[in-house]
Length: 328
Image 1 (tube, rainbow, N blue to C red):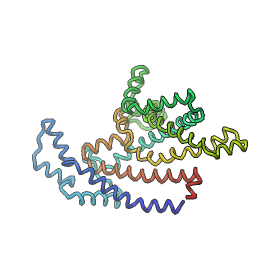
Image 2 (cartoon, one colour):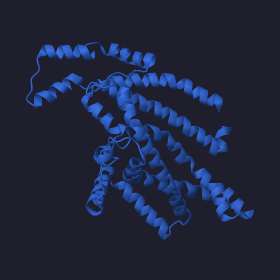
Image 3 (cartoon, one colour):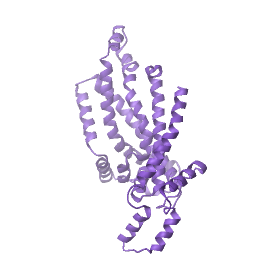
Image 4 (cartoon, one colour):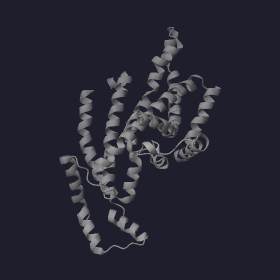
């Protein structure tokens, strides 16, 4: 496994280099650049900017340089100094903008993952063990219902219900009084009062999909000869279920962990915008719309890094849970 991990890490270097080049090119593919977008916004508001001012701003931001030189400057800053550049639109260092939101994104994703797994695995097991029962049909109906409802519609509905019928402050992760306050037990309690609603909204779609995956995989395992052999040897039904079929049926769920980390950055952007969550998703959307190339490129590069890390973690966990993979 150590040799396998080392090989994956070595291959990750050219992969990240290729991704950074492609991402930087894609961001600059639309006509114009950040200043073009900025000038269009000013013109729509009735403002006018002299050509000399535009040229001076283009030189200041380095947009008058060729694309390859801009990429070299960006990558040199990252590799030499850990500097991801300055956000054109917000006028702040990219690292400051990203790290300020990344903590909330990580925490929200972790809580959502715990919620989804804690609910999806037992329901999937129950649905498979009691196939074609009332509980199975109920779980199937709810799974397809939540898969069909768009996340943004679920977010709007949940916010309306909580505000209209329960009088709870919705939107964001804190009440207005605690947004800029220092961390304390009171702020932590206020966070707990707000965070459960985004976790519920974001998790319901994934919950429905994982319930169906768990049910299908467990039904496939229960029909295999080793289950019949274990029963013939007198093993109890509960021990048999947990020790063998459930353990193997978890493999596809573990493999999805590779996408959890990149989803921290890019996932559920619409829900984050609707619910005013201080996560990195809305920041990425804003950077792409404004053609803020250093901010957008850094977020896409971070997504690629997290994808590689997440895939490696899922592969290691699969090798731990399933001995067959280690022998391969």
